[in-house]
Image: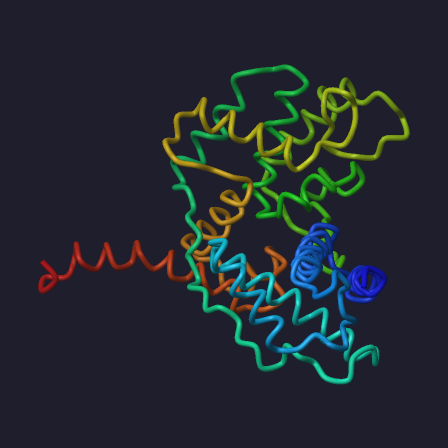
Length: 301
């Protein structure tokens, strides 16, 4: 069974171009499924995937609900199982897909919660208060996150040659290894130039290291490291709200649309495959229009 899962994960990575984080999530979900099958197997022997039926997956879903998993988590696990059995069916390893008629849990689509433009300014101003190599790195990172709307995984994966400070753009590789060029404003460019000349050179311990953002040991900064750095600045800036790297991505999109950017342009900047994913931000950007309407229209008072 493990061999089939490994084949599937290799298919996702090599042929579908899924990121390491996504394939790891699928691996964890399918490993949990096999663990459940081991616990419930009669005689202690797990039957082959070909004997896996609709009732087996419904029993597994019942088990997840009894363990009080969130609906979003259950929906993700169902999606992983359905994708896996779709692969097994296509490869001829099972004759019929037992998950075809299994419903996915309905999950309400929550709106992203951006910070305000004032809060974004407060956060970025907080990075101006220190001048160490690490502080110059932090300033460049947070300016770039808010200036580009990149995913945190995209940001920490950047190499030095992915940034063109003369042209004012950054090249990143999103989901499915799709390349996109993102223009960045002058303040972000200035922060990057300062970091490259005064911070990166001092943090780098090897001439062979290509990573743009480095930790104190001279290695590529991790997603977790960036998260902790951001939390520290948010606390110092006294924003009064929880903030993650993804918050800056949400804020970038919301503030761009509020400022008049068209939806298609924001879609391309974010690297969304479908414009419907970007449209969620339009619900946020129309709030200021309603407030202006209610404040100004004589019949709305």
